[in-house]
Length: 143
Image (tube, rainbow, N blue to C red):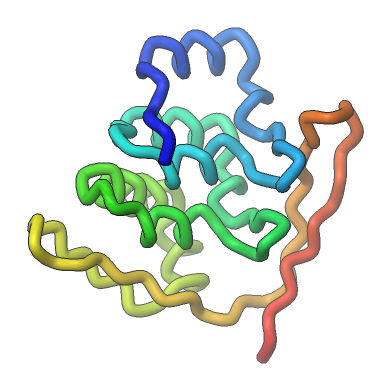
């Protein structure tokens, strides 16, 4: 588990280089994936990342996991709530199309659950950190 960078650092980076939110690491994880896994992340950081790259919310990594999967598994309940709030607020209609059973139980003793709903095929361009070329990821779901 990693800790969150400060809001000031994220803000400065995205103001200088907004495309950074769309740059994936070697595991095809975008900054939003990493933020959803980290502890101590504020909703403001999630919002900044999603504002810079809204489609990042619907991009999977090499393991087929989406940011919502990492948010759902985050043991830091405050960060989990902030992530799910930001992901839902990013595009409520799209979020509802893609995910069902959104049950936000934000009390410290309760779990938050988001179940994946099969979606139509979607291509999302991402930039890889090892190069400047754009790649296309096709997210396929069973019907």
